[in-house]
Length: 180
Ligand code: PRP
Image (cartoon, rainbow, N blue to C red):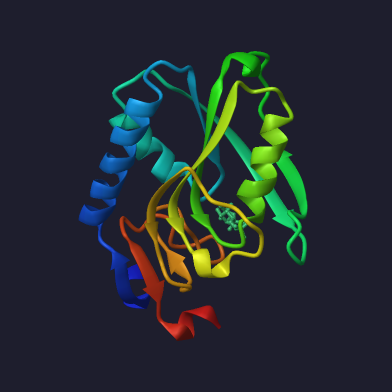
């Protein structure tokens, strides 16, 4: 089976993604030049973005991984469930940058920012490759954003539909029949 048969349209090409990640890496390298940067990759969707971003940084950085989910209703941040946590004892000296593939309601990043601030990290900021501001349910604004996109279900570059399509090198919308 060829995944490409299921693509309705490519929303962001590989070339545009590379440009977006270049721009983010340049900003982050500038802003964190005198800090102690720890990238926190949120599994699974952010794995490719985190690796590509990290390679382009011109400053030292470390990476660690978390897996979280969140649920809730209304305009409150909701409940954060931590499936994989950071296991390190140097967080008080670290400037954390949470790396996320896509922001939707804002609950995950809102809840996770609060959680990591509570662990005493020196600073906590957020970086998302994609943002769907029209889907926001709580007040949350990331510190770095690759691109705002409309409310379409997208896959590729780490993002999945039912765990498939993460390996596509671009961001795409699937044909409607694929969701059935
Ligand atoms: C997606 C995405 C964020 C979250 C954003 O993760 O990677 O973590 O949803 O949604 P929110 O803004 O509404 O909180 P998903 O649960 O799909 O997990 P995955 O990264 O493992 O695919």
